[in-house]
Image (cartoon, rainbow, N blue to C red):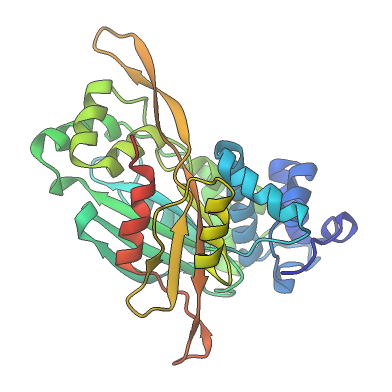
Length: 343
């Protein structure tokens, strides 16, 4: 890890100017002195590249997660206090493969705007125990430096009929958060590989709206019907397409998990190890949040449910390529999903 860069340096970066236009200068400075930023992303060109647009989006999502997940904010504060930076490996989100109103179904809701930023599907991961499928979206230009997205979709048709009906009522009236301005800017970015600062800011702001709940607060009865058959569907019912977790890439996740447990963090009991042995993951259990639910009489009630969380990953070198193993593992992913199941 390297020391955090100074404000004088970051303020000249194209990436800083783009991020600041979305989240403000103070938060942009915080993000870019917290995350390890590859030199290839630090240029001062007038036109942001697609990799810089993608990194700005990831940095904004990282900031959003810290505001929603106190345990993540605590961990990040400790890293900053030591003068170290965080290697942001990937973020994750959950989608619904079923009726979603005006919002495209499943992973298409995100691949449609992440592709113009330079992302492509790098791996498909069946999650049959969860009735889900995961896709790793990797950046074409800087695969190790720009965080990946792990996008999972829940297959509603595999749920019992009662849960399917509840899912249709909860998710079937979702809105599409992307407007014409965002699409115009995305088309320019896709065609040229870069865009104007104004277009880049429009893209990041529009994409951030996609990481929200696009459907109304669920009816309590529908939520409970989903919870009975799929805790993942229930999580999406309250949290929508929020950034499910952000992940630090670390040299020794096993030792880090032990250290954090000793510091009082509510850690996942075990470390998940991929079949090839090169990818190891664990996480802090999801923080609890209060969410509204609609009752049959039209009134509203609030209940505590699992929110988002923070994850850690160690990736070894793939001897076949000599590069960092950027793959995921279906077994690992299934195990990590459990951290949002505590009720």
